[in-house]
Amino acid sequence: MKIGLEIHVQLNRLRSKLFCGCRADYYTLSPNSNVCAVCLGLPGSLPVLNSGAVRQAIMVSLALRANPSTRFNFVRKNYFYPDMPKNFQISQYDKAGGAPVSKGGEMELTTDAQKPLRVKLTRIQIEEDPGRLFHPSGLGSSKYTLVDYNRAGVGLLEIVTQPDLSTPREARLLITKLRSILEHLGVCNTSLEGAMRVDANISTDGNNRVEIKNISSYKDVERALEYEAVRQSQLIALGKPIERETRHWLEEKGTTSSSRAKEEEQDYRYFPEPDIPAVELTEDYIKDIQGSLPELPDSRASRFCREYGLTPYDAGVLVLDKALADYFEETVRLYPKPRIVSNWIQTELLRQLNEKKQEISELRFGPKELAEMLSMIDKGEISGKTGKKVVMEMALTGEGPKSVVERLGLARLGDEAAIRALAQTVFKENPNAVKDALKNPEAVNFLVGQIMKKISGRADPEITNRVVRGLLKAQTSS
Ligand SMILES: [Zn+2]
Image (tube, rainbow, N blue to C red; front, side):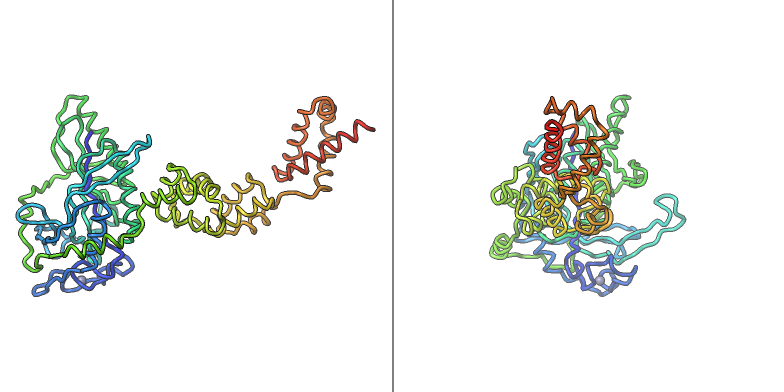
């Protein structure tokens, strides 16, 4: 199986759209209020290229080891669709005299089997986002469609990979890694719905290539490709041909469906954009950006191993999500035992997030509360086991650890008199075990276990052991 991806990344951290002064944070505004003559394509309006978008495109290119062009230009891609008020999209193209912002590039992934996988990139181009269509009762069943042009003209990068991926899972790994790189560069708020959209092409056993369009959430890429892989292998098993076609991903149904109108490249009638001159960049400009790139996931992972003594695997898991890596470092700043923090994040925190299908930013407690809870374990105020329960409660209610421990009465019982009273009850209830324990020291553990059970493991184990041995001694001497 061969899979290639075209990933559209919204430059939604810029102040303005790609060619006009309208805001890039279109999603915060009421429909159709973030528009002007330029992004609506009204006669006589002229686009002006956003230099911040060029800078970010070069940052992404360099981070993905692509070669930025010192001269590139824009083309018009003509098509008629209600989400495109101008009836054309200003884009880039690598044919017909067009030159995209960069060519080549490469991403290195780590497969689930911990093997390196290199995926080559074809090109990166700058283009504008269309508006948004809403189908109030779902695609295909709505009587009418609503359109919002707030998004029309927001900057996009299209990142095109070669068909170097061989499973849907690898496609997911690539998207995850790319997402982390974009977050580290600070060019895209990727958790925003539609901020990363994917078209994927997939061919099985050298058969025709099928393109899946419209995967509007990066989380769906694996699911859409898995569906398509099964559909294609069923056709092959039945001896039926696989048509070369474009299919749409239907998110609600979890299936793909053939899209009847297939545009061919010539239908777009590309021609050079007459309103925007070619852009020339100096080598110094590119060098300057190269020199100011922030720390990226791979070097951050190496630093985590070096500075905090984490294993490459653990460091790799943390840096694949910038917010998670930030959470880790902030907790370590407050509670400087990195390996313990990493373990808690990778077991208890990730479990909470997976169960609730949440992202770390949605977690109801922060590094401060986690650090506080870990210090409580160190001070013997709660046991490690209780700590897990506290984390669960904090995730549920957003309370701090002290308040959870108090409300649920989870504090470790270190009061010797109280433990002795419990032990005496347990001795009375289990006379045979007491007789056993007098002869067989291993049976002592049973009695300790019974005491723990009475107060759900909260008794201080050292004191409990001492109390039980003391009581047994008293029995033999009496
Ligand atoms: Zn505008």
